[in-house]
Length: 330
Ligand code: HEM
Image (cartoon, rainbow, N blue to C red; front, top):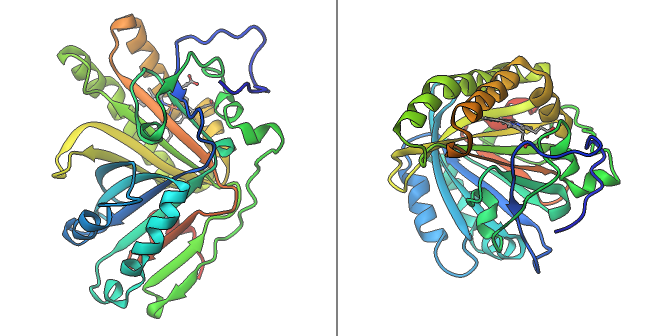
């Protein structure tokens, strides 16, 4: 396991609970996560995915989700993970579908948010030894992780933070505008931070499920609504709480928050000091007290900092409040 400097770790720290992280062993390259979304029934996007995600260089893991955005529009999305070299080859073969004028002419809102995560700019922490997210591409999980459970531990787990403050430099985001303003494309600037924070209650027994859904899930919604609606107060550029679905778009017992912020400090500050995450954290700790080791709730997250290369967003026919697009000045 790579040793970290753990600048923020209190002396003689012993984590309150075990934690795991993906083990990459021989693989030192970047992971790419690409979110492909449609602001309509899923058919158009699904038809493309069904052919594009087949064959050589296709993603190593694919998940699906659905959410209603602030404009009241239902979005269906795919979350797909690649090792970077595969992604590059794959995109080379499949980008023409996105670049075609037909995509614009159909008038259907389509978006893609692609984040390249070099390992030193990425961390993932899982509360149980069950694989989620990018860890599906790893060699398995390793633990226990010492660097967790204290404020700033997320940043400590990002190796690049040892030598660089990773402070956000983003002013207004600009975009390349095409097709009469119906297509906007931009690269993500350095130090923008992405979080995918997952909650999986499928393994909880019936009383635990009811408890989670009554005591914690509503508080999670409040926190996510705050970051979504008032994110400009703290530097959060976009937040969506997404229900995971099966391959037929039926919700399963998992959600995840997908968010972007000016930098890693935005989520760190919110997590350690904002009443909404403190309530989430408190709700979780009381579940830990109630169930102890029998608690089967799976929490996990992955956080990546943009190193300025290979991360981009494209929005076609999307309303202006879509994802990071809402921060773009054209
Ligand atoms: C039911 C939902 C959630 C629960 C129970 C929860 C609980 C926790 C816990 C226990 C930690 C400490 C983790 C550790 O280092 O061991 C933590 C950290 C953190 N959480 Fe949450 N969380 C939830 C949802 C979220 C969401 C949706 C976000 C953002 C989208 C988020 C952002 C963070 C961040 C950024 C940290 C790291 C803080 C740091 O290390 O400085 N959490 N959360």
